[in-house]
Amino acid sequence: MPIDAAQAVAAEPRTTQLSWDHKDIQLYHLGIGAGTPATDPAELRYTLESRLHVLPSFATVAGGGMAFGGGLAAPGIDIDLAGVLHGGQRLTPHRPIPVRGSATHTSRVAAVHDKGKAAVIVLRSDAADADGPLWTSESEIFVKGEGGFGGERGTTTRLDAPTAAPSVTVERPVREDQALLYRLSGDWNPLHADPGFAALAGFDRPILHGLCTYGIALKAVVDTLLGGDVTRVRSYATRFAGVVFPGETLRVRAWSVAPGRIQALVTVVEREDAPVLTETVVGHD
Image (tube, rainbow, N blue to C red; front, top):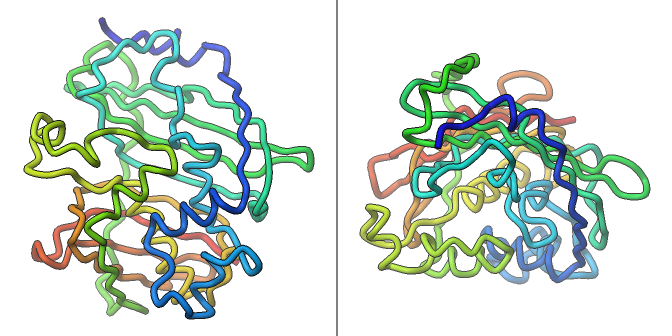
């Protein structure tokens, strides 16, 4: 059934309640590789409840859900989930996320673009608590085979990696059980755990969640270029360009390209620097 873009965009927002505490924060941080070395004071800020701060990318799993929540069930969207790819993610924290909190989460379809052979669904969500807005996130979802419905194509921009030497280059090993740990934060897609399901999707083994790589990269940037201060992050955007298999090594290159702006590129070391996160930008204080 073709996508009805007008109906999807006009649909009433979907509202849910989120809650979390220090255990959810610690589990998420462990899921993106925090805690090595376990006694490092810098790592204890991610793992020890008495020192805990919250990496802003926790917003993508807060309350045990996925970044795009139930947006794909909106009226006017009747699609085959097998053709769905997470194309991009943008997060804007409005203030630091508390270690324990609850929030009202409102999500809607912000736009639907017709790319010809595919559709791009832009899902926007906002979270707020009693003190006001907490974060805004946008997910771009590519749906293969669902284009051609006569909608607007949307704008296309490309941000190439800088040609200068990076300000910092770090490598982050991905544990064999990283996806199994990360999925406990709420993304239960069997693609990341079940070899049989992964084979049906065309992979020889389960792959790492893109949003896990997203968190790993932000932590690397915060720890190396922002003095470990998670509250300095003002925005974080990326485009998902490839897959990561548990057991591989991520190479994170980051450039301080302008005041308040860091650009990054994430690749897989073992596959000749195959790109996995491109057009990645962290806005900061």
